[in-house]
Image (cartoon, rainbow, N blue to C red; front, top):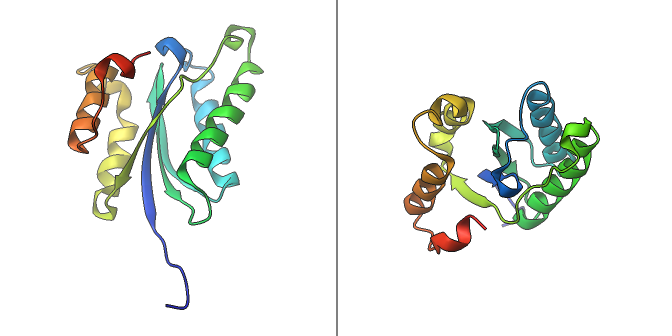
Length: 150
């Protein structure tokens, strides 16, 4: 085979430290836009970004040249530093260690986009913890619940 052909859709999920509700208007949309630009910096274009006050979902294409861990580290590190500059109320902003990353079947892209777009409605019915555990079960990821929330 003469060339490398790759198409990996990734659904990333990560939370604020201590699940503090920092992602609020008027900064929420600006934070999502900045996360989008960071993904683009690494040639991992974001398709959809959304979340709730304490967590973010990013659906993006993973570049064939960027390891997943590098993308996550870059996005979390750069955005954390940037968010702190937006307002004095955000000085204590940090992302929690860790993240979830799940591959997405191309036939499910529209469903995931809709899911991400409707996070606020979704979380009126289910907590973030319930949502995240459902992802882990769906993808058959082994976990220790005690370690998930620390």
